[in-house]
Image (cartoon, rainbow, N blue to C red; front, side, top):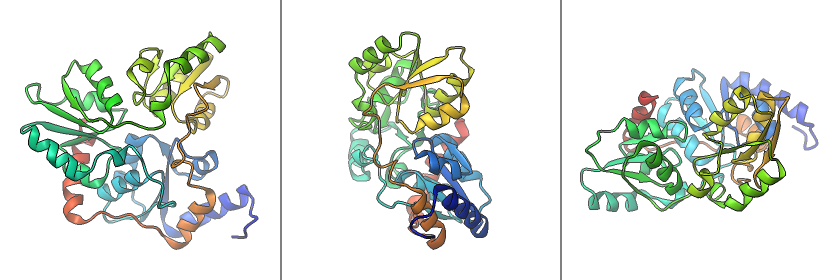
Length: 307
């Protein structure tokens, strides 16, 4: 495509190539609006995992970050999985590795290891069951009550789960560098500026921020809540990319970001140009060694069976 192609021209070419390649495009709700618009499915980590497991397409173009494309490859090993931006990573996922987790498991024999889906394939292979923010409470509630639980890597989500289940858990000291930026002062300021608005907050936020929310939910949970609730205004406490789907789902309502800090640079790396390039070259591919994939697949399949 020429360098000066318009958004519409590039989008049309992506749709043409998608059919030619027998490809499906999956995009996280934190992606750029124009990337979301060319996707076959836009969702949160849980929905994207389900789509990756169910697709009949030969090629999965994953517009997200590395652990998401890995999960798609784990669940669909017979597919070609392409991550348009190979350096789109997740700082939270990097806060725990398999060696660290193995060491901790030796300190906690008999513990059930629950890993947030925001982890590497190697960490999933060392874990018993995965979860997303949408099903984390349900996953932990499904575990035998007499077994100790080790939750990795997000301390904020872990504490939220504990508060909802009453379950004592050992929680890893990791966090999302975007959600953890949101402060009590940010929420208080937004509420003062928009007194009629309900505050929607992601469970990756700090406990004191979560305590101020009118609704704590995953990204899809926020979108559904805003659409179904009678309120007309909402304060949004998650990554700014969600605004596109919030406006599409509730075009007659108003949404205000809780802070201008809520931008994930890794999620914004993917562009229409990189999606187009990925469809042309089917690169860069993401795959997982079979010995790791088999163990990680059990971890993810257990999660999907709870849903």
